[in-house]
Amino acid sequence: MEERPLKEHLAKLGPPSPISAQERVPRPWFNPFGDCIEFQSESVAVVADRIDDFLTLYRSAENNEVIGFQLKDVTALLRDLGYQDLEVRWSMDDKRIVSLTALLLKAYGRSNLTIHRLSGYSQAIRTIEDDEVEVETASAC
Image (cartoon, rainbow, N blue to C red; front, top):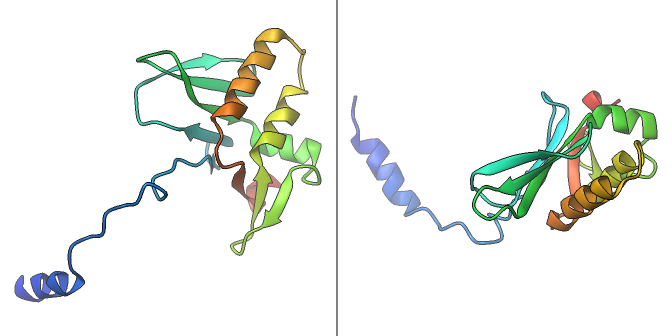
């Protein structure tokens, strides 16, 4: 197999451009296989801190600071509570864009209102920089 055409093609493209800081900003994402929203603001080892049936906080193993979370049963939350309060807009690829803060608050209201849960949910909300998350319409209906 001849390597020269590939090398020539790569030389035409030039060196890869460095990824800007904006492109590396962590974003919450919907995992359709786990039916959950995952978010982790730093790539470090974490300790999971289960708050309730819906929310698990991710704490940095280095300093115990909350750096992310997992919100479970997203499809059930969306189906039971409806999109009307959560939907921000539609995307072009048939996904709904929902407010993550609104979704967290809806999950918080589904169980006993305790100081532990209030603290956990407020810590999760404080980790969010981008409040919008895409949720696949087919799996959320």
